[in-house]
Length: 393
Ligand code: ADQ
Picture 1 (cartoon, rainbow, N blue to C red):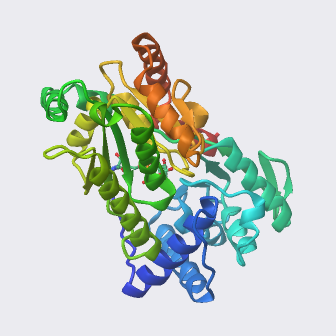
Picture 2 (picture 1 turned 30 degrees about the vertical axis):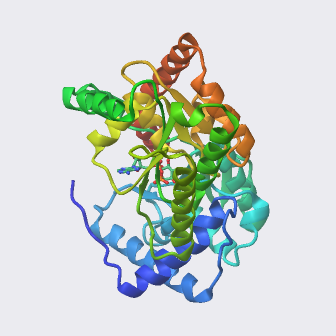
């Protein structure tokens, strides 16, 4: 494998990355849970950086190379490569949701973005809904014709479909089976104190992940159910992310205030009710946390897929543990056996915390077995074969 870096300047980082990619596209594509900003001074660098990637890809590729372009930062690259290599096979995969037409319509450069993507032969999404939303937008805002799965555009046929991404299941299992990971998991459980249930959240610290709301729901849960504070602990592991984007600084403050408030009200000397780690953890350590949890709480307001949910499932080599999953994560389309919640419904989440804790062990195990089968069969290798099979098929 050879890598060819494409250099970004400080100004690209500001305008292309923090600006157009993460303050325009990211919120727009996640249900506008924050206000997307539209600035011409961000759009121009987005076009330029995409040009630079397209040029670098073509220059480093052998004559009959195929191209596989990933994610929202590079949506113009397919058409830019197509211009230079009209006969190339080009695939594009979007890792985040594609928004409904009513929201996508906001974007001043909607036609250009769609035409950029339509340079590909296969355009892949995480869910059938995103694939449908994209096709609908292309039919409305460009001269493309066709249906949800096959579009005709400027004399070419473009296939549109869902390819739900996944994880390396076998590698995750092997890690969870390592004696030092098992020992670490035991140690984490011991530190909690006997009989205490562990709720776990693991996310990039992003406002789409619903971390603040799930903590507020935990506060509601503690207030509503007798002895809940003695029986349950919440561990939230949050990876620092996009700290220079103002909305990310804001969500961090919100989460940290919530943690402080819960511990102020419910913590005891020497034992907190919520444990909050703002850092990256090594994969083995993360695996030990997954293995130690009673309830894995994955409640994004909107998420393309969510690999944490799948990593948790694969790590449960003991066949136990409950996955509480937002209906707005792509993973909810696939993962039958998870307990599903509406991440906006605080009372609903609080009630789900209680029912997850009290789920009969046989039910819990049956659900987990079902979940593990699904992730095992649909691992990341199945995902890439499905996509590439379509591209070369
Ligand atoms: P993300 O939004 O980053 O990905 P996710 O799919 O959950 O979300 O992946 C997060 C990754 O970060 C996981 O592999 C997880 O193990 C790791 N991670 C989380 N917390 C960590 C910590 N404290 N320390 C170390 N590692 C940590 C985007 C989309 C998703 C989509 C993926 C893949 O937003 O919807 O599933 O791409 O397509």
